[in-house]
Amino acid sequence: MTTTRRMTVSQALIEFLAHQWTVDGEIRERTIPGVLGIFGHGNVAGVGQALQQLNVERPDLMPYHQARNEQAMVHQAVGYARMRRRRATFAAAASVGPGATNMLTGAALATTNRLPALLLPSDTFATRVADPVLQQLEQPWDIGLTVNDAFRPLSRFFDRVQRPEQLYSIALAAMRVLTDPAETGAVTIALPEDVQTQLLDVPAEFLADREWHLRRPVPEHGPLKRAVAAIRGARRPVVVAGGGVLYSGAEDALREFVEATGVPVGTTQAGGGVLAWDHPQNLGGVGATGSLAANRIAAEADVVIGIGTRYSDFTTASRTAFQNPDVTFVNVNVAPFDAYKHGTQLPVVADAREAIRALTAELAGHRVDAAYGAQVARERAAWDGMVDKAFAPSGRELPGQPEIIGAVQRASDPRDVLVQAAGSLPGDLQKLWRVRDPLGYHVEYAYSCMGYEIAGGLGVRRAVVAAGEDRDVIVMVGDGSYLMLHSELVTAVAEGIKIIVVLIQNHGFASIGHLSESVGTQRFGTKYRRYDHTTRNFQGEEILPVDLAANARSYGIDVIEVEPTTDAIRDLGEAIATAKASTTSTLIHINSDPLLYAPDGAGWWDVPVAETSSAETTRTAREEYLGQQARQRPLLG
Image 1 (cartoon, rainbow, N blue to C red):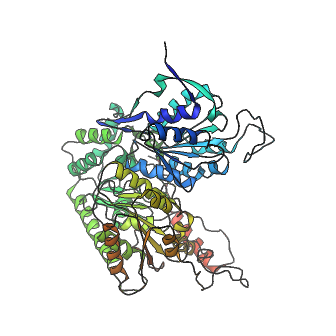
Image 2: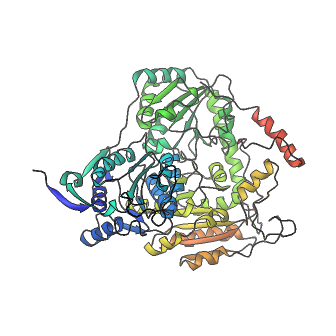
Image 3: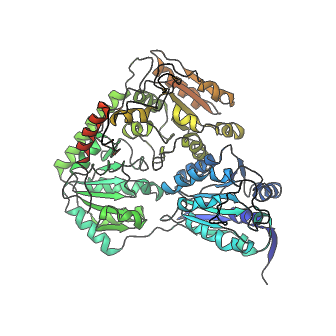
């Protein structure tokens, strides 16, 4: 006879999640180690009650973490998931209506980045006994529609528990997607507020420990054989390594492959760290914000070996990076959707680590031409020299972003984790940051979400603590992104989570300001200035009297202000050392000059320019745009 327990739907779901385990080879860990939540009338009596009851009875089974913003909860889950190589993530529970829809941006970010996050948004009454209830969306053409249906296109899995009995199949299906390397992303289970509290006789089997073994598919013989033939026939092959290399734990396999064959490597933002920065085959970032070394080699490559990359427009420089007319793509990816990109006839649908090991074995004795290897070495050395110059302190009172990055680099330890997401920093970091550890570079650049940085950094730090590792988490953020979402600093204080935040203030949107010049709009709307009621714009010179250091200090974290002097870079290095020695979170505030740029990597990004304009700057920008656009290629092959 089957043993059952009488529980509410919420109690059953939370206890079910507490017993899910991810197994990856010899590694076994909790798939959902905790719940991040903000309670409202839609979930306080359901999920909230379940978490409170479990906290009293078994406090270690499913820890609850309080958050300040629903979007930020998902960012924390994503930051954690990346550091755990997609083996684990957090659940994020929100109330009905605005609490739920606040998570939409986080859902899109998780799915775009191919990183797992479990979303538990509350929903309006399934019974519709009192329609319309508070915060309910009503559409006369579809009475059953709720705001949570907006999660459907943003999630890799979506379902709604309309009746208690549906919980079993929905929960199991959700876990399958969370732990599937090819399908993972945002997983959303919508929970009507009445169903959350309803009774269910739950079979003991549903609440027992359950293991989800990560799939590591090996390459099929035919595709592998064709890929090997293409690589053997290449004169100028190059690897484009993406996040899939890290998620499969393939960095050692990749190093052995390139050392055996001499094939150079360009990395995507997600792939930063797959090789140490000073490895002879590491050319640095490739594409729109890549290094000059990587882009010069990529331009002439005849075979591009994409491993674990989704080939975003930044990676391909909007399809201008690979200029060889006979270029062929060998795409290794666990997801067929990505493996078949660019119309390749050489897809290898397989786990990155298994595929790289197979390629290494099949290519035994094969090595690139010595002359090609020498060119790679020259390009690397030249670019390293350019980075050294960019890092050198200028003595300016307002230093440029490159020398600020250099100061943080020098003051950090090899295993520290750098976190970033949006603005001009991702481009400068991909060019300049010298990654020394596989998990030391965490730049969310699939969705490039302003405001991810601090919340994502908290998720990273949670993962570091869970692993028992000695790493500092250094969040670099511009004032634009900081103003989008900084409230999770309160979470850091509340839980005693240590992160180091380097806040670079340039009084505007530096990245889009620079981009606006390339499209002829001359930094319109990108400066933080007082509104001029005569000209009706924000283009004046009166800087806003906003004190972001005081804002951060008001949250209760330590703040170090680097004054604008000729010793600013030296003082920044000392501030980083002080922050690293501390046991609590520290924010370091420094002013910068947004007009001092990193070295040019000869990459391009397709941002269309107006075809007609009365402004001469826009007309000039259009001519330049057409010249670059002419270099775009279909990249079929």
